Length: 260
View 1 (cartoon, rainbow, N blue to C red):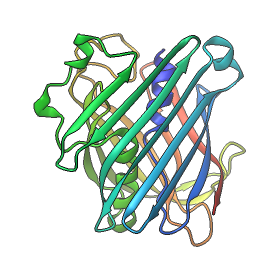
View 2 (view 1 turned 60 degrees about the horizontal axis):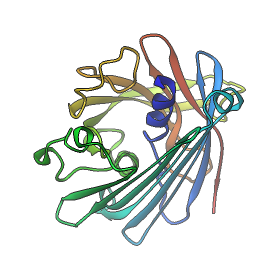
View 3 (view 1 turned 90 degrees about the horizontal axis):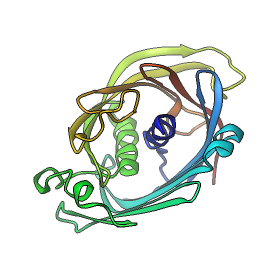
View 4 (view 1 turned 60 degrees about the vertical axis):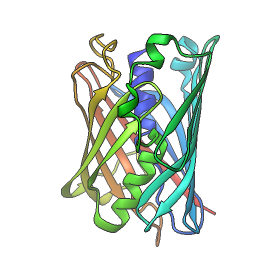
């Protein structure tokens, strides 16, 4: 379960920064050098609005063990070209016979409502107190916000996230220029911007006390991300993200990119 949650969290850490046409990026996720998950991400930003989607499916080993898959989408507005305001978020998670859906709906005044199927337990539904929920972002919209802001000012800023179960802050910090070496697992080589992404628990983590889980009570998680333009004339996108856990490193590499 820890690896699956880590993969889902890593997939949701970024989306695609575009100006007029949608772009689709394909990623592969490795843990300890072993291929685990393939993912695809799309985003369309136009006329002050955005629509983003994420899909992830386990590789042969993960599929054999769990038949895990994940889909999520978000829609909303983009203010001043950098600040996102979500209107709705939908996710669909499957693991063998378990099937969970989640809907987050925003009223335009900063408030969010949660609908889950199967319904959340009373404990889970109340894990994040009402005062921590206003003016937050869903995970996909937070990724859009990180990239949209990065196109103007570089990777910087703090983004408050409520995912329907937990409340956490995602803080992005620019670390400077870097160079990625040629690799058969990543389509990008050469110059890139190196950034740190820190996830800080705020509320809803009281039950997350199992060692090794990505979301863990009282534990900040840190990822390193490299941003570069995958196609001529296109904005910078994450070409690599690395997340270090206590017992394994998880790496997500960009393997293909296309627009239109």
